Length: 309
Image 1 (cartoon, rainbow, N blue to C red):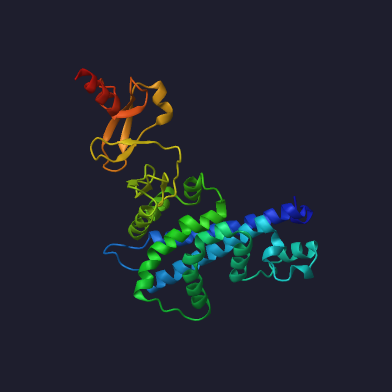
Image 2: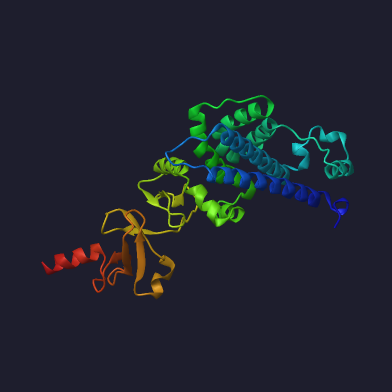
């Protein structure tokens, strides 16, 4: 179907998808720049890398936000004085690459007014990016050494947690969605980038009793409270944890959906890495960690000892 034959809603969907696709291009290029940085010795980005990463990341964000606004508020929400044109004229200008769009600051104000929940996620961390990007594009920006160091984890966090949130808007499958944009090797490099790992571990500590190793990306950034990895964004609210006999943390994960049809299952501690057997207590039917044939949980075993005494 030619674009001139589409309904207005279909046309807006086409525009939103096109903008989204461009955002992904910049996101991939930014991810490559970050992943290719030699971080031996915990070195800051050099000026060239810092400049390129900042611009690519900010451009990806601006396009992702524009796509989000078109999807939710219509194409006219991002255009300069759209009332001057008919729908057909807007279509024609789109085809001729002549549409004028608002500034990112105006996008930000619209998000703040109409989409406060998603706006608040990136408000603070994006402010520095926007200021740096504007100076780079219009004049010259001299990074301080500390800025080039902080940019290593800030840019990675922007790509994984913020830009992709605008692109997908799907918390449940967010880690799979991100992985679908990048090659497996690039995604692994990105989430295991040492400055980023340090940053997300500190972040996870704010939302955890104990920070565990993620069962998916293996970064130490998994919250035992939120059941979420702050590195790769993997999330499983239904994940169950049992007490580890070795490190005494509640940190052993297992396939709880299949425990009913198995006498025992392998369990792994996400804290110390030790392997265990998980079974159902023959007395109270609760899942527990131990070694067969001692098939009683700690509470039932304690009760049995008291009865013998």
